[in-house]
Image (cartoon, rainbow, N blue to C red; front, side):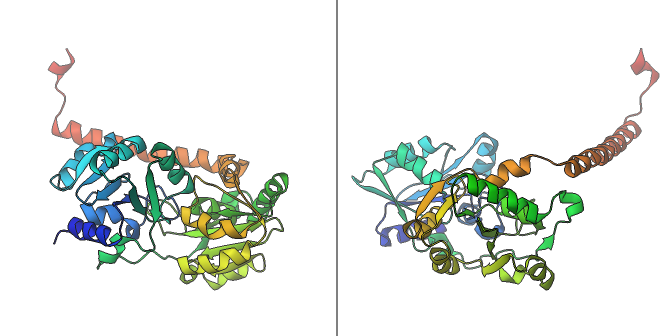
Length: 342
């Protein structure tokens, strides 16, 4: 039986009208690890941006203009319609293809942010969005690759230009200004910048997949894959950072306790809906705020500026060598004659 038909059977059994499958992961990486490439598994599409919506009797892949031709080549258009990547277009397609009076779309609450769900609900108030206990794609993905787990390593201060302790003090100041006890960070890029650590868990981005709570006291609770830790890392951050296992079960169990009755900040553009559902009922206040690390890391210090300039020069030299080598090959294959210069 075709994968699509199996999923449509599961939709029937779940008593919903369809499911929404984004090209995303719980960390909102631009390039997601292979473990989360559910769209690639179910349809064959390998682009970096897309959403699939599967209904009981119809399915569509939504892509932007970069991938229109690629999608038509990679995806069986007998099973999937190729549509424009736009939230309004997605919801319009659902309303066109599903006639139920009370449409219910299932979704994985780890893969959709609070902001994304809020947007869908504003666009289509008549559609109900239901978080699923398990992702139906994962249930049929028998040879699913393991999640990437690589050793965390330190990003030297001679390159960062600022210690991780100084960076935490900057976040503490922001928490003080906003009258918050803690902030829950869900962007791996922000956390790795904050702690001056790196990893190889995601393609093209030197990050370790993680979540973190930064408290106004300066203490940090870091959720990581414990296999990624080394004795050097644990010793380096002792006693400021407490390490916890990165897993849905661990987060569900520990977050309510770690944040109980606190005033907590988080970023709706980055935080999975599942996170809000876990911590929302247990905190004194849950405030949407900009990720403080985004602006802080955008302001480059003198050390970073020096290395940016040096890298630009070295990259320029490599580019010139590449162009020159290509030019020499072209001239050798197609030598210029004097007649061409008249």
